[in-house]
Image (cartoon, rainbow, N blue to C red; front, side, top):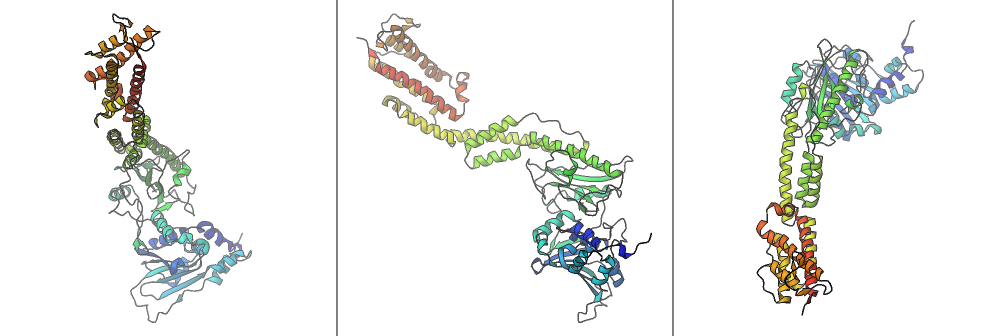
Length: 585
């Protein structure tokens, strides 16, 4: 069989350009890749004319007329294994983004050359069922034309190549906004770390280099700003770099990785979290790529990279996945699944012991004066502190465990301090519940008889705990006033007043009668108020702070106020009963 260019339709352009690069700035990666592969050391990307034009200019060797023809060839590549590109289609990647592509280049001691590609004509040919690729080339690409600049540049020792995406299409403007371009470059291209901001940069670079991760680099600038890759800070992570390596059955390195684990336990986005797959410095997929190979929920609480070293594992044309062209790919993906499960177990272990975010939330509540909410959060946190599940046993993860455990110990210490602050705040009446209950307490006190109110309000500030004594003083005076008795002890006073003796009829007839028709009730009431007095006043005088009153002193302040209200209510009830009792004639 024989084939001619008539057998290759122009719709091939749609497959290799629109199908791979439509709706994203991936063409920037392709042009940067071409520049680096051809020896550029500096690349400048700029948004011009308000973003209507995107320029990618490098300081590479430039091209002659013959070299331009090769560069514009379709599916032809002379790149070797050290280079990132190899399919020979990247030159055309900008077609879906703009009305025309402009290539400007100058080789040392050669004239400047310029080629314009009319993308609208190409799109028109794609609509034709019969147009061939050759016709598109013949009709839309002319020989490189020298652009006179008023002087002969052929003798100048300058060299560069510039690609311009002119008249960005309205449907593509979002993808070429300043923020999108910058984030894309930081995430995708082989940019270095900013060593001034990321303290693990040197350690990671040495680790990758020593394990066979090598790729070509260049300084890339966007609108004059140097592009670095994430992370852009260190404080968010534990102080330990995790370093996984995947080997094949012959102990050959397939992939080398590094991971940092976030201190907090909440969902984060790039550039703080995500695991990037890379080949020759360029990213495959995005920061969430790993999730399609992990069954179940994977929390993005790590940031890291997996650099593929094996030449047998290749990315697909769109660089959003892999070509299943070699037996090693399945082994690699199985390893990824297994390690993702291990990293998720670290997340679960962190959930059990690392409560920094909750502790910080409680501190914020205290700072805002929300004492009651802080107290409830402390209670919830303490209920959730359980014995952590087992930590993964992989040796490369060992350095991370002490970091997580140290956070747990620190959080427990801070929690203890927070509880002390809450207790002090409650004591000072800063709690909403404490304040509300104190207001209610004094509102109830204002309903008591005057002698009781006076006794309770005489208690000095800071000695509110003594209120359970003061509430009983007025009972003693009331009995004395009604009976005329003057006894040294409350025991003798109530015995004589109500005629009781060991809850039986005593030797003394009662003076006060709660119910003249029921002498036993009088005696029982006398025993009641004596018992109350003995429990709370006598015992409190001699045993305050001891185990006897632990139920009271260990209670939170709002609970103490409630207890005092209840005890005062008992005293108030007794006072009313005595006040209405008859004096026996």
